[in-house]
Image 1 (tube, rainbow over the protein chains, first blue to last red):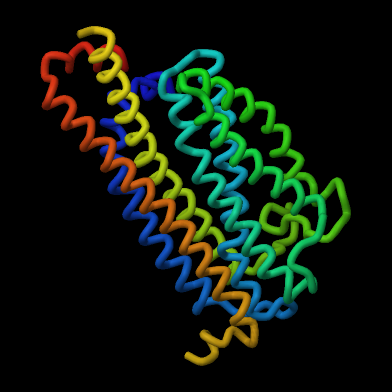
Image 2 (spheres, one colour):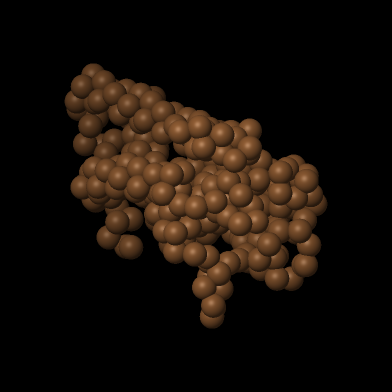
Length: 240
Length: 62
């Protein structure tokens, strides 16, 4: 981790990873979409709406994964002051917000035919909505200061404080017995999801992960270039 | 093919779910790419315009 905290080294490593993460995303998406839409059966209770799960569940996983990533980067930024950690946190937030938004909308599109309602103030749904607000709050806060380092610090504190929401989302289905069904993929013991459905679900989960890696590389590169532009302008103004 | 497009009567829910996912993902990809290209070309132009500053500016960043 330490070695990649150097921006120049990160850019070199990112250059090697980028074609692989982009290529893997395309391949995994193609396989996941084929199996999810054509190569898997309809559910005996949910019918064809089960196919919404192949985008809903992976986007929920990514909403949580990206936020955890952001919280770790924020902790690293606050404790060790690594220059890259703030950049990673800032670059992650809009991507995490996108995944969380997709999770909420696809959930509503599944909820209407299956539960009979677009939305309920269920513990899982509500905590996921709070996650979206945390992402949006982070994006607004980071950009609210003239001095980017102050914005980054405020954002890091928010990301860490908001991390308390992540275990709440994860265990909300066990702590509160409301509408949203509990986890079935990670259930210990009897297999809760048939392999014909589990395979496309995991493929889509992997595709979303490699897509996140791809986006993160592009966005960190963008942020690093923007920081260098600021530095050059600063030298122009003050140094010459 | 009608079976797939019809989605067993749930086409009005399944296809919008995939559509919104695609729109958000593509939107993220396009804005990220556009922003990166804009910043990197701007940086390249600045470096070319001020070759003397280059070393100092990069030192300040690393």
